[in-house]
Picture 1: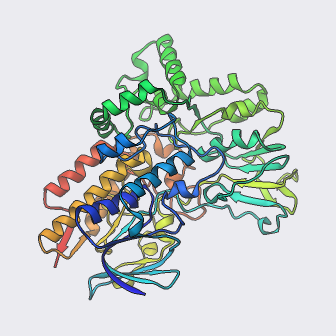
Picture 2: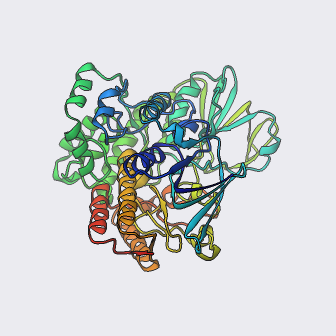
Picture 3: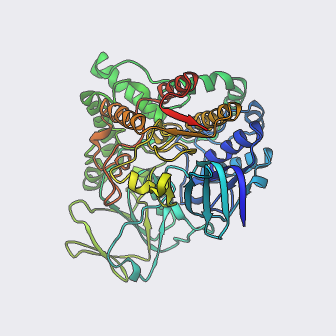
Length: 534
């Protein structure tokens, strides 16, 4: 089947669903969404691993464009789990009749720009072809699973799973010897749940990580009533903060207060839980000495919680500034290591050499018998989902070649040489440094406004320039270098978790509020940095 349309959206998660609403329902375009999964949800459709939970507070982790939608939905917990978020997105799909415009179970295998026709030609694995004026990628930042290339994995006699591709029927850990590789945000969420089911859990830790207790709880009726009565104010606050969360970052500096007051404020943040701990001081991510104080506090907490001194030291042996990597929040993560059926193995000093038929062997020769291996090794973040689709722009130039030395975009929205292609929450945008629905709504609305402007003025193509992309690349690098973020040299923000991936800091660290203002200025100024033709 070959079909001509106004626009095509790839992905039916938060991004693709709202972009569909903006283009179909507001602009009246003929639009189709292609979704690889069999349902809506994006990352929340695939990530069903034990303990999967959002690290943004529920009343902020939702669409804000519709007061009626906000009134109709009620969250049950402070930090919603995967199943509840998926129910929410199903509710949105039903409420706005989105499924009639979505093709499920459809994988994109190629997209080529036909300059003569001024069309994107998109091919699917099933053989369908779409010829569209506008192509919008809404494939998510964390959707391309990173399975490490371990010697012998293919010969493992047990079962292995990646947290980002979890079986929908679940996994039975009862009485099993389980090995988990990875202690990032996903691994920190899954450890306590797996530990409660498995016969024994061995956690293979290469990089120790900070984590703040989530203090998750059921929402009270009083809080639910407060949220419903104050939606506009909450949304205005989220739009004013650098990370899009519903709380402000205190501007005071760590050394503005004495030692006792600093400790009291850290304790207050620890008791509040979640990302609000990071908001206690305004200079934690820009001043190394200030960061050392926050890091030291968390390490002391780890040593207080974990009863075995050797295990506690391994967990507290963290080699990067606090919040320079994605700052996890947890439910009894460190406490899990006090269980008799949980052990921690340091694979920085003694790396994994191979997977055997019966388990894992380290470089020292030490072996661990395992029935199940869980890879909590993250994703080929931000660029991976885009590059795996074989996108080719003008003159057949591959996006993979253009980004061979690292991704370069203008505003995270367009790539030079790829007309009428918009990338949602891609590299060069605040993206993963932000509460995602806030970033997503801004992107979807900006893209829709741009397309609406083009249609109103008889413009057929929009394409950023190489000069604009290069200048924005410098802006992205400067914003990162003004913080401590690049000091976490093994962070996936830099692509360091994927062998051979260019080491380039990918998200824009200048803050969502500043980014929003800049994008608005570009649109109001006639789209400088973009060439509009036809």
